[in-house]
Image (cartoon, rainbow, N blue to C red; front, side, top):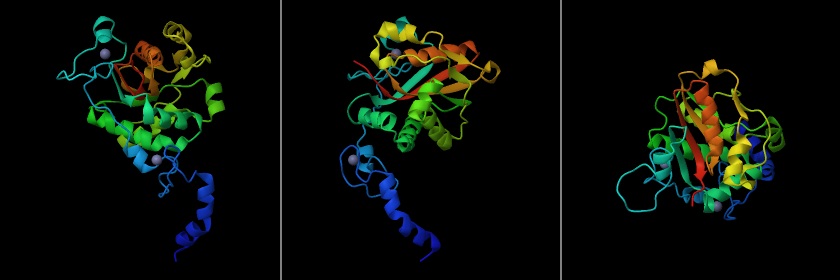
Length: 247
Ligand SMILES: [Zn+2]
Ligand SMILES: [Zn+2]
């Protein structure tokens, strides 16, 4: 047996202790080391929603009308970003996986989730001409508490697959804000006003950027981030999120 093989055998029990051996969603035994937290069956069963959707904000339509058309909001009050897509609705299995990823500390889930986001971006021609990937920042205290910024981990994964560099620590969050989920829509907007800043606008001027966040709820966070990036001279801001909360 090779040295590597022997080491692998010796350390096999350690791996089981480090990662849960049962799928956090369905409870089945994880057979492959690559699965680690969620089994490949559960990942395959994630419903990645394809069109029809609004070609600008990505709102999903649940009707049988042919083709993609602008939604009422984009017609009446267009968002500052140019393009947004999500993998699916913030519901069911997708929601459960995102919650496990963010709040149970399973950073490794950024790999399969980042890959799914990359595949969605590729299918919808969202990557062509993008100069930099920009993660939505967390305030440094929040990041320290959580131990990671989920948007940054997803950005790194998409960067690996697309070879587009991540622009880190340029868009920053200057003060902590109460969690958006606890607020009403109007409060969400004022809660975030002026909290994002671009440190080096010269790196952004004239660039096409891909902004990454985990969940799109009212869109306040990505709208505020986009306004700052556009103020710094960004030519185009596209956005991808894992899921979209929508009534
Ligand atoms: Zn499973
Ligand atoms: Zn729209």
